[in-house]
Length: 130
Image (cartoon, rainbow, N blue to C red; front, side, top):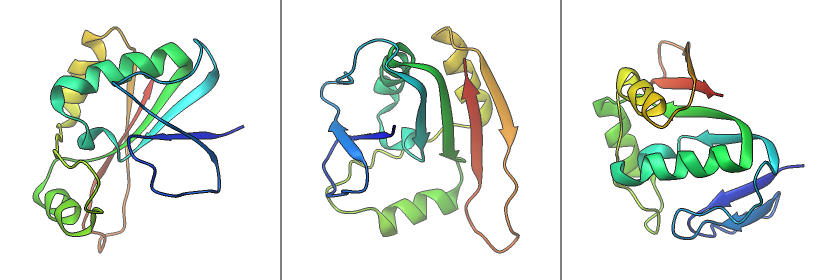
């Protein structure tokens, strides 16, 4: 069973969806086996990243994060292709800074290197949090 969550309803209809409000997920504790963030966290202000991760840990047993690596190509990509109504603070972090944040909020992080084709301009980070 898959449920998507976003801050804005972008009109997707291929999964159940919920809208997050005030950094609170509308689910009971331990509702899911996994929570995933796919290139999402850099769209959340630095000050709110820890709060939403704590909330994800409340509702899921494990968290999987696929995130853009902090570099100029990622900034340019988001500026060029993000929908106008999407919040774009571009709060990227380096891998070591993500790891520091995860540990600070008592998550056990595992980091995996993401391979990419040489011609693809964006670099990514993959974390599993327990």
